[in-house]
Each structure stands twice: as structure tokens, then as C-alpha cells.
Image 1: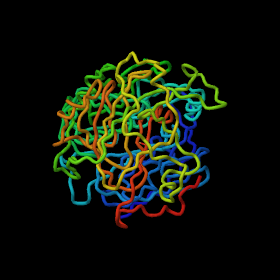
Image 2 (image 1 turned 180 degrees about the vertical axis):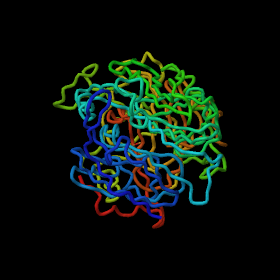
Image 3 (image 1 turned 30 degrees about the vertical axis):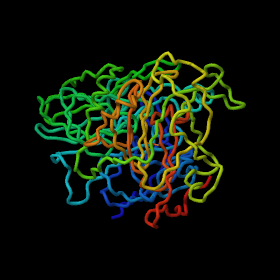
Length: 548
Ligand code: C2O
């Protein structure tokens, strides 16, 4: 089965949003870009033609890329960018997974407008492990800036500061009726009384975790990050950038119109200079067929800082044991890692205008290593061809300093917060099992960080607040039916524990999926060595792989 997309073109597009015309970078003339639908077992071939004025690369978020690491997409990690006027063909098999994923640009902040849904249906003749829905709809939550996104990026980061907050959130590319000049064109979903629908909710926002709610309708969660869950009924979904959540809704209310709405879950609004948040609300409308036109009912969204609601949602999810693609938790651990994630300060680059605090620039780090992307060669090319000097394999398993990680008095404590830029990665033997405790730090500000791992799903064993307790936390590990994800929102002022098996050779980025933190260095990568046989060895790159 080969599904070939015809000529996806990345190019400039003029669109009307929030009362003005804007020129954005878009795929095939749409925002969001095209929906890609495949079946498990298919080979997906996507020819990307870059007719935009910017460098581009596309990441297939959540796809395992078994032996096809050359198609993963992050710039300077698995490929050099596709230059304007050139093309690259991504080819990969889709095996061992099904559900809702998505694709997005993986250069600077271009994913603000270069993204779309990627839906993997079960193999022919296989069914969902839940009632067959009467209809299915992708709900892409996005984040919109009125200014050119590359200008926003450059103005912020160039000066050691942070870029501006967004101007709106969107549902399927549209801000919706609560914004100026935006009611016509808002996303509308028509339902029939008594029927059940599957909503595939994707958080494609750059920097904002979102609460999502539908007036007067409960939702039943059936999957997250393309992994089935035990069914969980909820009136609100919380979803971090990078994550997806599939819910069933039944049209069981009086025929009328109902808003679906999303706004920020901002765990620490405005705690640090320049880190306020966009407090606007995006809406779409669910309209019952044959209902009289009416003003839609508005849901009451949780308060922006409602951490208990977010934590309850995230920690109550469990995996669907023995459902399709269920994998038991690895019980023997080869690599134990404890990784602090948080902000910091770094010395300013020579010749930069540097306006950050304490004469330094804002940065971010894992275990005090602030990740610097290479520029001369991708890390995967360096791995494949054994080229030195592109990365080093000394990413530490533990932070260099033990301190009270979540004490909010840490503030701008420069003695523990200065980090240097480096390209440190962690090397893993093929098939080794890894446990990582992520610990948020409260340097500069208390924040939640959605950490995304490329190339693998992981089990989420436990999560909690405060400093990780080495003695007591393991007693709470769920080794029986934990949720399986590719992106974990490490709770604000807290920690989370994951496990995965490194069964795919290549270079796999792990990073905060808030785009405001990725360029600051909140990343590292795993270099997974080849296995013993040809079928566990990374094949050579495609001949059109972009060169630096
Ligand atoms: Cu969805 Cu590295 O990202």
C-alpha cells in the first residue's frame, strides 16, 4: 500500500485574519495544511517542494520512523533544511501505531502556520476498541500572530529576550466569534441528534497549553498521542503543545448551537519578565441539524491557572491494556536518568545586542546543558558517516548540582542558573531500556514543560509536585496500565517519570514542545546505536537528502 501525496507545496499565502490581510507560509494554500490519512501498514511518500522564501523541514510528530530516521525532519538533527527552490521526498512506513498524530515544520517558529493532521486508521478489517463513531473530525488548535512569524522570532531571541505573545488562538485555522472580524468563517460542526462523533483534538499551538471544553456535552477520552486509553469521561480536556487527545461526544442535548472553546492553561502567568500570556479564547460552534438558529451556549472554561484540574486530567489517564498496539512496561532498566528541565541564563554571544537580565541572555537547559543545534551537518549524517565535532556524547545522567529545584525563591539566582551552550547527547545501546525522571526547576519562573521525544512512545509511570522523592515516588509507579505518550507535560513545580525502549537506531531529539523554549536550548538528543543485524541497522540516506 503506497499512499502518495501529490505535490505539497510550501509557499506564501495571503489570508485575512483579525481584520487584516497577512502573508503567511502555508502548505497547499491552506491553514491548517492538508489532512493526511493513511492506514497502518502503509508507506507514506511526501514530496515537499519549498517555494517559500524560508528554509523548511517537516516533522511527522509521533511517527516511530523505524529504520527511516532520515525522514524524521528536525533541522540539523536528521537533515539540513530544504532551501528555497529545492525539494525533498520523505518516505516512511507506518507500522505498530494508529490514531491521531500530526505534521509540522521543524525550523524556527514556522510551524505556526505550517502544520496539519496525520491520521492513521487501523489496518483494513480492524476496528477501533470503542463504539464506531457516526463521524470523525480533526480539531486542530493553533496559535496566531499578526506579525510575520520570523520577525517575531528574530526580534525576541536576537536580543537575549523572549518573543511576543500571540494575538489569538484558532480552531482549524479560525479564531472564532470572540475576536474582531472573525465570526464569519469560524469553524462549524453540524451534528445529528443521538449520534456519536470522534473528535481528534491536536494542540498545534506554539507556546500554550490549552483547556478545551464543549458547552453542555461531556467527552469520553479514548486515546492520547495515538495510543488508546481506558475510556475516561470528562467535561474538560487539557492538552499541551505536541499532544493529541481523541474524544467521543454524543449529541444528546436539546437541538441548538453550542460553543466548543479553548483558552490557555497558564500555570505561572507573568511570573518572569516578558512571560505574560495570551488570555484570549478561541471558539467553534457545534450546530444540531434542523435546530432553530440561536446564540450558541458558552462553556465555562477553567481558570487560566487551574493546575488541580489539569493535573487531575493528566494523572487519571490510563492505557488500554491489551488494546491494539499495547506494550507492557519494561521492568528491567538499563539506563537511569534524572533530568532537570527549566530556564536559565547564558553568556551573550559575541557581537549580539544583549538586553537580558544580569547582562546575560535568557536560555534554557536540561541538566544544565543548554542545547545548541549544529549548523554544518545534521547529527544523523555525523552519526551515519562517523564524523566528529558535530555533537559530543557526554550529556550527563544527572544534574551537576543538587538543589531545592522547586523553591520559587530560586528566582534569578545566577550561581545556579548560568549555563553554557553545547551539543551534548546521550548515547544508547540498541534495545536498551531507559527510565527518565524529569524534574522541573523554578529558576526564573515556575513553569510546566511539555517534553517530546522523537522516534519513540513512552510509558508515563507517575507524576507529582515538588522535588522528586527517590524513596517514596517509586512506590506510586504504575507498572500495570500506564498511559503511553510521545509528549509529557511535566507538572508545574513538579516531576514526571517515563520509560521507553531504544529499539530504533538513529538520532532522536528530545525537547520542550513550547517553541519559546526550544531555541533557548531546552533539548538534547539520543544517539541510538545500530543493532546486530542488517534489519536493525540504519540504511543509507535517500539521494535527495538536503545538504548543509
Ligand atoms: Cu512536534 Cu520536535 O516536534
